[in-house]
Amino acid sequence: MTPVPEDRGAAVGPVPAVRSPWWWIPTLYYGQGLPYVVVMTLAVVLYKNLGLDNTAIALYTSWLYLPWVIKPLWSPLVDLLRTKRWWIVTLQLLIGAALAAVALTLPMAGFFQLSLAVFWLLAFASATHDIAADGFYMLALPQHQQAAFVGVRSVFYRVAMISGQGGLVYAAGRLSESGGDVVRAWQLVFFVLALAFVLLFVWHRMLLPRPANDLAAAPGQALWQGFTQTFESFFRRTDIVKVLAFLLLFRLGEAQLVKLFAPFLLDPRERGGLALTTAQVGLVYGTVGVAALTLGGLLGGWVISRHGLARWLWAMVVAIHLPNLLFVALAAWQPQSLVFITAAVACEQLGYGFGFAAYLMFMILVADGPSKTAHYALCTGFMALGMMLPGMLSGWLQQQLGYTLFFAWVCLCTLPSVLVATRLHIPPDFGRKPEVGP
Image (cartoon, rainbow, N blue to C red; front, side, top):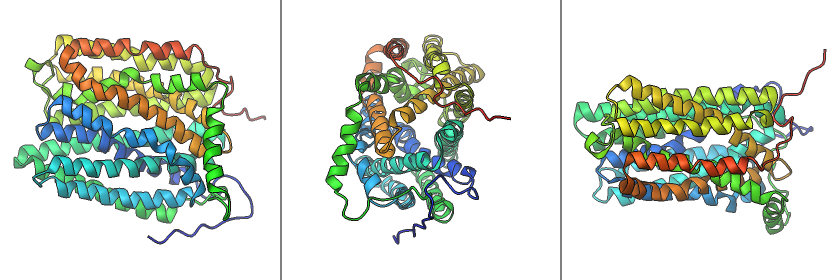
């Protein structure tokens, strides 16, 4: 593809005033969230519909976290080669092509191996897109606007989740029920996704702003030296052990719960599940649940911008972990009321959205500095590692324990992050919007 011309002004600063962040933050983070939810959630429901068991689903789809884990290995290249804007638009076109390729593999005899290979390509493209998008966000906005818009970016990331695990799962379920052809239904879903990314590519190619500080490395700059210095400056932090512990442990319980969330809702009651249909899962988990998640994210970003992260850290730690107890209750009682199930899922997702705002702002705090794009990618890489490793064993563990004991185990796994949170130092004013004088 022909690179987008990179116009430069004389001044170095944030996005020009004529180009409001509302033009690009919603679509940028929608484009970031959609391929992630395809790989992490849609793939789970797809393989469940096509007859794979929980152990295989959890194991193989958890491996798809790997590109997000190791993306720090190439994140300095996104800083040093080309601009963040160029990476964003190029990768959105590649992601669209990969989504179309998934659709083409599903009718084939070796669909599982072939689709999994394309999901790997999609995961690598999406992880690289995340590096560029997050770097662009931090370059284009001053710190207080980053805090103010953290809820907005979370909202549209969650809108992508509603579109993916809500609307598209519901559509796949309805198409399967009406036509009786599961493969054809999922093919249509992936072709729609591919078209969405072509449209995002066109939109961002035309309208994504060109901040003057979005620069590639100067010609002749020592690439390897810049590459190694980026890693050294991150790992030389005096608080690196606390930082890594928080990044790895904050979602230890959630990493296991999320892999069995949809299978628990879909499994028949004799296996300990709630026996919902695919369309009902799309409504309960992917629409109402994600709407609650979005509301929690907006609220989290708003309170941080008003009072700072330090003031709200503990409330957010409690909010993200305590509602996991609801899944113990759901598994133990197996209620038949869809309203009750929906309310429990919404409550858990609301708390998760509110609490996760603290995690996002903590990563922005850690990444702040000259190499913020690569350092933020390192943070998200460790975040992904903290999701991948527990998730890989979650399917096997659930089959050994059953759903009730498994969700009780998930609740116990939230305790290490509480311990680590007691050791963190957050600047009192970090994330708070500066006071404006009269």
